Length: 183
Image 1 (spheres, rainbow, N blue to C red):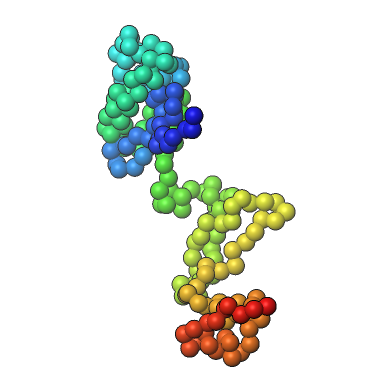
Image 2: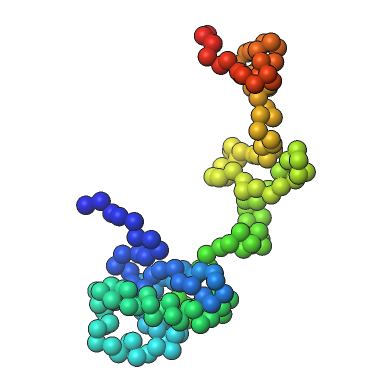
């Protein structure tokens, strides 16, 4: 059998999903085993769920996945992201915010790992870009420039890489490049 897309859910690991805090962001909560589920329910102030006869083991939790996702989602929607992170951390429930680009640019870890670099740009001066991934120790790779306007390197490529002469390169400036030449 071929697995199909699951979205943010993790099969047989309820409740594990992306949930929306009240501030329009997202948090991933992974409470897909009984001890973690019990800590999450207590953190939510929903001890009643712990005594619910329909939810007494992992198989039962999985069978009520949609219902539990609604309960957890309703709870997360009452709190902002930072409050949720604090509550879940205190309850030892694995959770992580889904980063926005603002989060990425404010996280010192990205800079410490050299994952965001300033790169020269002909028009903008300098721009921040995601660095080369993976970062290999012997050949880490580098970004020399941001790219530039379309066609900025065409003449160089035509001369250097394709060996075209000045007349053929000039034809490019006239609006047509015949690259179907035989070697």
